[in-house]
Amino acid sequence: MSAAERSLREGHPQEAEQQYTEAIQRAKRLAGQSSGPVRADLVKLLAQAYFNTGIISAQAGRFAEAGDRLELAAGAQPDFPRVQYSLGVARFNAQQYEKATAPLARALAQEPSNADVRRMLALAWVNLEAFDKAAALLKDDPHRESDPSLQYLYGLSLVRSGHADEAESTFTRLLKSQGDSPELNVILGQAHAEQGDFDAAIPLLQRALQAKPDVPDASAALGAIYFKQGRLTEAEAVLRAGLAARPDDMTARQTLAAALEQQGKGDAAVPLLREVVAARPRAANSRYLLGKILLAEGHAPEALEQLAEAATLAPEDAATHFQLAQAYRQLGRPAQADEQLAIYRDLKDKQRGRRP
Figure 1: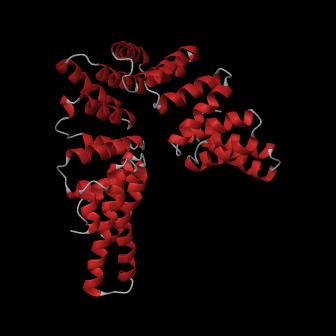
Figure 2: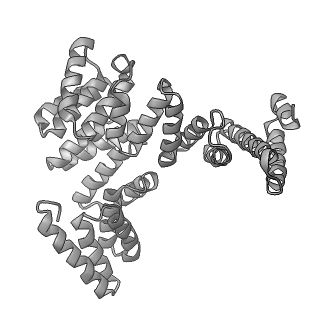
Figure 3: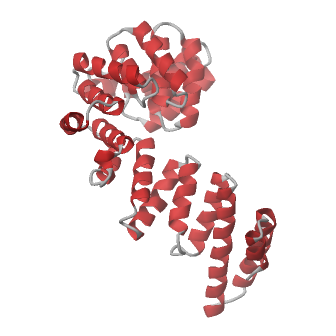
């Protein structure tokens, strides 16, 4: 037993971490000077040390750091036992969902029957808004129909991946067989809303909120319907209530910001959008709206930064190029403004009916 292993077993993780770090430095130095079986043994030792320091970091709640160390372990020895699983879990717990999907997928390939890995990978795809991939993973989950959280996740994935009709039929059947539940009402409400049947969606979402005020996505879905109907004050009220119950609901935060902007309350929308962009850096709509408001408030340099990123994320969005042209114009860069305006006009010719 090594000194580091002994320290770990005796309940001294900090001491073990230091000893593993020293072992890593020695193994790296020796591996660079060795070849053949000796070097292979040193690489294995290196992977073990990186893996153990990653686990120590994860147990201390330092998930991003754990992910970095486990990444080194996987790089040294990709088939090291449990390294892909541990790396995926660390990245997931650090909310680094883009980095979590590849190791979780590899872990699932190694253990196809591991339902926990399958569900975590599905949830990572949901957080990345890759709902079609999440739905495919959850479709045959043996516990889906008996677990409300899995039902909800599957239904959400169906609705958001363009299969609202399938979600409606599946969850109408579940509602009949299992009885009323807030989660099922939310899914059915979202399915109706996705198909444009707001009259059917609203009472379902209202009933869900009455039964369980913090039920996921109900306030965001109802607020989005009110927003689309132009009922901005009602949208604001239901979204604020939803955020009071679920402060981390970024979808509700984005819709609330949009409702505030439509009411001429851009200054109140900006901090909401900053939080959304921080949590979801690839949210093009949020960057667009933030840039639009900042531009209207006279903050052209920061507006340009947000709008340029939005254009990179969603290059086919005409409105973004229009606002980007205005930002360049305000900053005295007419050539770039004209270029963006030309892109805007070309896209509008192809995409009639999108936002001005």
